[in-house]
Length: 191
Length: 191
DNA sequence: TGTACATCAGTGAACGCGCGTTCACTGATGTAC
DNA sequence: TGTACATCAGTGAACGCGCGTTCACTGATGTAC
Image 1 (tube, chains in turn brown, yellow, cyan, green):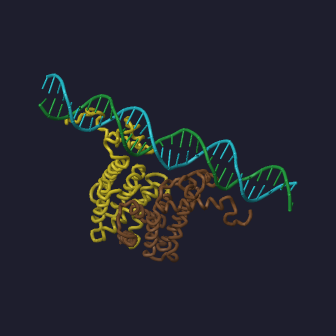
Image 2 (cartoon, chains in turn cyan, purple, red, orange):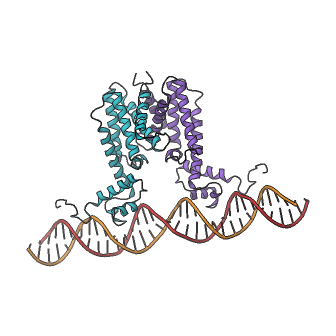
Image 3 (tube, protein in one colour):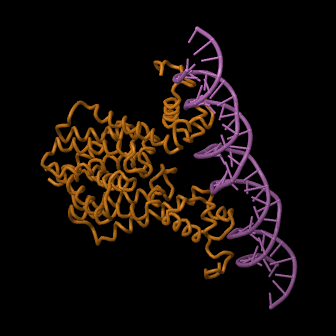
C-alpha cells in the first residue's frame, strides 16, 4: 500500500467517484440507474461490480451518506437544544433537508431497510437517537420514547407532504415558517 | 344505452375490472405495471388504452380510490371528534390504513401530484379539509391551519416511518398504541 | 321488422427502450525471490 | 536490481427481461331509415 496519491491506481478511487457521480445525479433530479452512474463517471458499465455487490448496495451507500449529512445539518444549529423553539428548528432543518435534496431523501426513506444490522439501518437509528436525546434534554420528565417518535414523525410527515405536493408553500422560507408554527401549535394544544 | 346488465357489453365494464385487478395486485404486494394488470384481468395489453390515457392515468384513478377509502376509514369512528383522544384515533386509523395497504398508500403519496386541479389533487385536498375540520371542532380557538398541518404531518410521518421500517413494532396493536401515545405526548408537552 | 352503416371496445403483432447482470478478457500494479 | 508471477481493477460484448406505447385490425353493439 503506497501512499494513496490521486490517480496512482487504475482509476484513482472509483468507489468514491461512483458515489459522487450518483449523488450528483440525485441532486440534479436525473433518473438514477447503475448504467447512468457509470456513464457519468466515464467508466464501463460493469466497473461498479468491483466495488458494490449490486445496484442496491450502491443505493444503500448513498443512503448512509444521506443520513450522515442529515445528522450534520441537525447538529449544526449550535448545541444541545434547550427549549421548544430549539426543537422546532430541528423540524425546520429536517424539512429543509428533504426539500433541498428530494431524490436523496427518497432513497433514504423510500423503501424498507433490508437488513436489521447493515450500515444503513444503523444510520437511521442514529438519527432516531439524536432526536430522542434532543427531546430528553428539553423534557427530561416526559416519556422520551413516545415524544421522540412524535417529533420525528411530525418532521418526517411534513417533509413528505411538502415533497409530494400535498402541502403547498411559495418559498422555502414560507415552508420553514409553516413547519415552525405547526410544531409549536401542536405542542401547546393540550395546555 | 340498455340497462347495464353484467356482460351485456364486450367485456362488461372493463374500466372497473382493470381498477380492481390493479387494486388486488397492489394489495397482494405484486409489482404493478400496465401489462401485469391486463394479464390479471385476462385482457390484451392494449385494452386499457380505451379507458385510460396512459399508465399514469390508471395510477391516478387508483390513488383517488385510495383517498376515498382513507376518508371513509377516518370518518368511521363515529361522528365529529370532541376530544384530544378522538383526534388521536384519527392518527391511529391513518397509520393503520397505511400499514394495511402499503402499496396503495405509496401510490397515493409516493409522487408529486401532477396537475393542480385533477381528481387526485382534489381527493388529497378533501383529506386535508377533513382533518382541519376535525381539529377545528376540538380546538376552535387555535390556528386551525397550522394545527391541521401538524396533525396530518404527524400521522403521515408515523405512517411512513413504520411503513419503511424506520420505526418498529411487533404487531398492529402495538403500532396503534405507540401512535396514540406519540400523539398524546406531543400534544401535552407544552403545557 | 330488416337491412346498411357507424361507432367503438378489444386484439395481436411489433417497435424501441434502458435496465441489471454474466462472462471471458486485458493490462496495470504489487510481491517473492 | 531484475525477472517471473499473482492479484485484481476496469473492459466490452452480450444475455434476457419487462416495460409503455403505436398501429392497423376485427367484430360486436347501437342507430337510421
